[in-house]
Length: 117
Image (cartoon, rainbow, N blue to C red):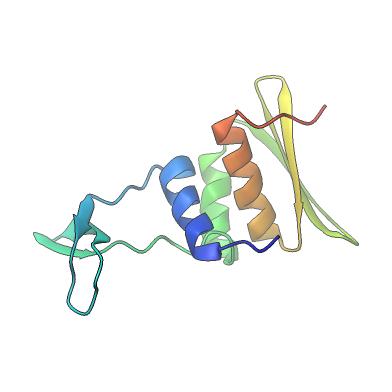
């Protein structure tokens, strides 16, 4: 399964980090309206941080999860991230730690996924 990392970064930004664009606007050179944020009174394109590919950005996700316990384990198949939330645990294995952190965080925040037992 191929993952669109930009889309995943946007999902993490909105659903986990609660960082939402203000609205959409047409920018020069763009055919479709793009998400934007207001900065110094002017709209600028909203680009989420690279949460699934960057350790520093993924660390911010971990900080956001500080109300829950979590565990990150590296092994031969990659990295497994487990989040313990409300007596349930949500577990994801991925090739890299930032990706595992993001996928597990989304799974826990959404809480509609079937939890691991």
